[in-house]
Length: 168
Image 1 (cartoon, rainbow, N blue to C red):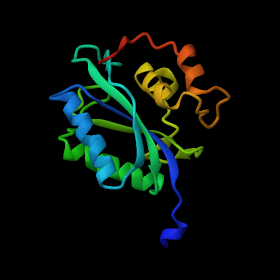
Image 2: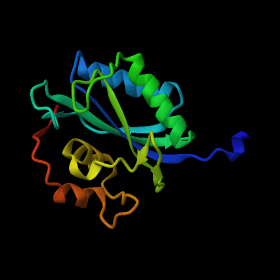
Image 3: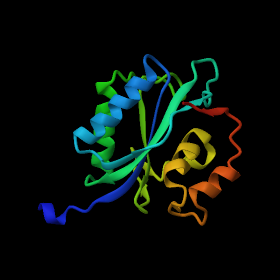
Image 4: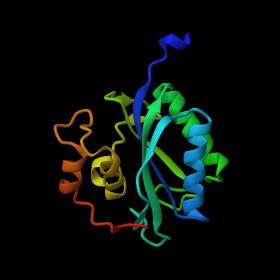
């Protein structure tokens, strides 16, 4: 593929951590995403302290969302995000348990992707304040695929009862 054939695609990622120096890990992961050319034109939300989803007996998370542009396919983007998670010490654990770093692809343009390894839009995003609130902060007017409502509107409809606090 020649450079002129590569198209820039809007992406929105959710990053979270609840082990170690959470804020520093998230900051470094965002820097790495940009430095490695995984995303460009990055816009980062505020930090949010969030109550754990699913398994409650663990530290609260820090979550952010990042929007930007990518020249990678969804599969390539997933591979690069997983490599960055490992770079920052991500260990495999059961679902909803502790995370050194978690990077989820929430949106990839208006595309719908359903493979064994990847579902875009992320299948749980509408149920999670820790994704919707920071996403709406930086992309509130965005209307996801298969939806008539913007992120701002989806936040108001979300029934997630997990606490979320904007951090300074």
